[in-house]
Image (cartoon, rainbow, N blue to C red; front, side):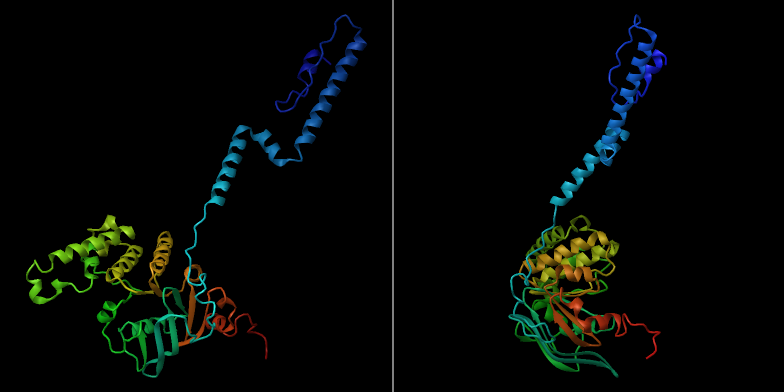
Length: 373
């Protein structure tokens, strides 16, 4: 074997090769050959030992093969994992976590510790169709209550009855102890119970700030005589504008303040409706499918605003089909089906309620419909 072959044998960048001793030219040829062969064996054994040490650890092998770039990628991935594990969104303290519902029986019509709304024997018929038939329902003050159920269950009709947009065939209900039967919707709102709609009711040809100012209560300029003059209402409108700008900033709509409401996206209109409802300083806010048609990017923003309403001491009742939202923010859930209240309880317990499962999935869910009886 030549000297070049000996010096280059096994010369891999990643393998450690023991230093080969120079061959003494004065030594006999047989000794030189033996020394070269022994050096080759030693080098091969060293390389084999190096590979055996590397092979069991895949990460180390990849770093040897890929070099510094792979090591840097691994460091970046570990850093991102550490950051993600330390970032968490705290869930606002709910009424249920404070023990408000601890002693409430999870059944239809159950009594609440401090109800703000009490409805009894409310029935609404359209010809032969009974849309709402509620024996009793209480809504707990300063809590978020979800009203859920399949399509056609009567949820929006029930909303319309409570807020005066429709009148029942029979029954009565109170808001904070005041009977509301026969009260006009605008008077119900002035009393502190406001609602939003599944289809937004923004005035498209008015600007966002003008839509906001319309929501304020007891405006002097709405009266014919005073409306012809400016001095009776100028100061009040200035105060309303300040309040409206504060709410637009809170709901992150201040950048579209002077845009027409008709130019807003669906999610922005939902935010505008919610912000406008707060111009009344309500004690109870009723939201009809607030997530319907909303871009997923705005859903989390809406959720945080709803939680903030409760944290400010307001009561929230909302209709929703998005069960992720219901599970995340609800303190109590009411389930309707075919106009009746079929279940009530904490959100985490209703998934095991057979009546709720049947209402959503049908009584034959999970059964083999091809099986002969």
